Structures are given as structure tokens and as C-alpha cells.
Length: 347
Image 1 (cartoon, rainbow, N blue to C red):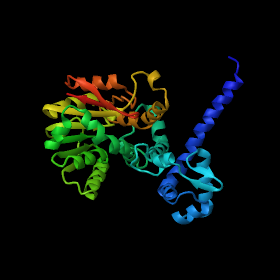
Image 2 (tube, rainbow, N blue to C red):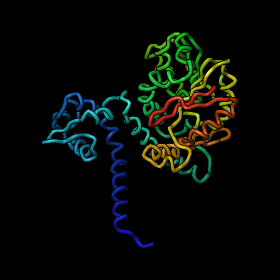
Image 3 (cartoon, helix red, strand yellow):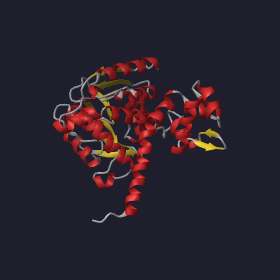
């Protein structure tokens, strides 16, 4: 086919935009680590010298950083002064806002650092274990998901389930499977002090971090233990899995064990990436992010485990529901959703 110069130029423009975003990752992380975003939000429109003085940084570096941020549209520039609009601050300077995306930049950096290991796995077909991923991927993933959990878990997701909030308010035993750094577990424990929560994860480092977080927050009705989804101990009134079922090597075995661990009338809440059932449904900005993360993180993690089902982050509701039903659950319904997540209730 002949080369269409108009289409070529449009495509080059798209790729240049992508490259601009890619090279912005370290700059955003620098701005976060040095408090440049939060300081700029606090002091208001500033010159580079003023922001540098307030943040305790070199003015020359700050000037170049601000120029790059303005070119990216991440800060606002007018008459020699730089500032954050309310919308920009909501994304970059407000850690618990529902639109905070700083954690996603950390995750992107970890994905780049992990390229060598995943690239080798492309040849062998083997996995890259969660504990072997480069950098503090566990920290960045916890930070990336935290805003969604803080703003929706207790306020929207749990109330959308059948009778669960009443159960938790009265006092229930809860297992949070694949708890990671314990953000979801601790939020639930803080909201429902009459209930007892146990967070399980197969990664000892994450369990240590979760325990430290619970201690730092003074939460006493929660504990964290190393455990696998397919054989964790105990029986429970309510079980949760946040953004982890698709990462498991044998999610069907996990579903079967969770069904056995639930007491009569118990519920299982499964939070997964909000994906359509077909590739065509997921060709959009969110799908782009999730497919990329799935290639670098989710699929390698699953392939490193027994069975290696490798559902991927964009498995879709139909496939996830199929896995849930394979464990003996009769009913699966979508109880709630956000642009990034779907919340399924199984009973």
C-alpha cells in the first residue's frame, strides 16, 4: 500500500505525545519526592526562584523542571509565574483524591526497571515471581490503588453488597486475600471496629509492610499473615479480593477454597479492573494502561505460580465470573463500578 503522508504525520504526532509522557515519568516522580507539587499548591503562583526557596531545592533545576511541566500541561504558566490549577492539584498534589495518579507513575517506573526480566520470559514462557519484580513494585501498586480504595470502598462498594455493611457493623470475621500492603484491610478495619479482619498475602515483604502500617495507624482489630489464596486457614463471614484474582496462578482453586472458607450465607467481594469481555471493548486509554501493566506484571506473576492461568488484567467480567462459579458459587453480580474497577458479589 502507498504511504499516506497525512496519516503518517498524524501517527508521528501521536507517538511524539507518547514519548513526551514517557520521559515525564522521572520528572513527575522527582516533583513528588521533593514536594514540588505540594509546595507549589501551598504557596500559589510562583517564580522558579520562589518555588525553589520554599522547597529547599536548586533554582536552576526547578526552572527547568517547571518548564517541562508547563510543556506537558501538568502545571500552568502565566507571566513568568507557575501554578497548579485545581484540577492539576487534584491529580498531582492531593494524595487521597480519587483522581490522584502519582502512584501510577511509580508503577510505570517499576515496569521499565523490570523490562530485562520480562523480556527474557518472553523467550522461555516462564513467569517472573511477584517477589522477584524489580524495584518496590509492591509499594507503587499499593500507592496506585490507594486513592480508589480510600474514596470508594467504604462509601460505595461495601454498601452495594447485600447486607454486608450491617454484618460488618454488628461484628464479623473477614479475610482479605491478596492484601498486599494492607490498604484495603486497614480501611475496612477502621470503618468497622466491631469486626475482626485478617489480611493474607503470599509475599512476606508485603505482610511485613501491612503489619507496620496497621501499627502506625493504631488499628487493633486487624492482623496480617503470610498465606496463599488456595489454602489460607480459618472460616469467615466475608471474604474480599482486591485487584488480585487475575494475578493468581490458580484462581479456580482459590475460588473453591474461598467457597469452603465462607460460613453459611457468607459473601465474597471481588474487585477487578473494569474491562470488557473483548479486545475491541478495551481499546481505550484505560485498556491501554491495563494491558501494558498486565504484560509487565500480571501475566508474569501468574505464570510464575502453580498452574499459571495468566488471566491478565483485562480478563473481563464474563471470564472472572466463570472462575468464581467454578469454585461453587451460584450467584455472581456486578454490584458497583468505577472507571477503573468493577465490584462483583458472589454468593
